[in-house]
Amino acid sequence: AQSVTQLDSHVSVSEGTPVLLRCNYSSSYSPSLFWYVQHPNKGLQLLLKYTSAATLVKGINGFEAEFKKSETSFHLTKPSAHMSDAAEYFCALWVSSNTGKLIFGQGTTLQVKP
Amino acid sequence: NAGVTQTPKFRILKIGQSMTLQCAQDMNHNYMYWYRQDPGMGLKLIYYSVGAGITDKGEVPNGYNVSRSTTEDFPLRLELAAPSQTSVYFCASMWARRETEAFFGQGTRLTVV
Image (tube, rainbow over the protein chains, first blue to last red):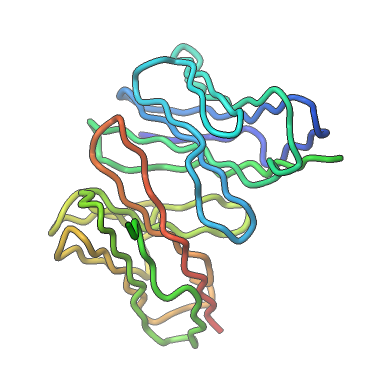
């Protein structure tokens, strides 16, 4: 069965320090993986996606993620946090050769302190 | 270019009432999804559809029904609303290809009192 686990429900960093948001997945088929961001009272915006090409994926606003099949992970990173990065982040999994479900993790709230 | 449109944006229902949340997309996507979002719980899949006439249950389908008579529309029906259905509902659509991603509507905030 497919599943997505975000290992931290809440992450707090200081402005200018690195960000690491962790995501593990479980899938019997080759996955597509996504990171979405949701600012308060807003919809979801795509940050980046992995769909079988390069394992290091660059997204918007300086974020990037690395697909590691051996570790079944897709962690999101950013070298230097900005106050505007404070939001809810969701990791998602889609398997085209299976049911077509798009499954989300529980979300990680990123707090950025001045 | 409208993308994914959800209506209404807000709604208050009384216990036992019924309503339909509308979702329409103009990108000719074959896959469509309905999620509910509760604080600290992420997005839970309610129902999804891989094409017109085909629907399937997600993680939390109880109390909901869907239909997909056209490629564009994927309405979510709540029968006999209960307080536990108070949530924010999101509709999404995507192509069934690995190179794509899901596009989301702006959400419907539903309160059942």
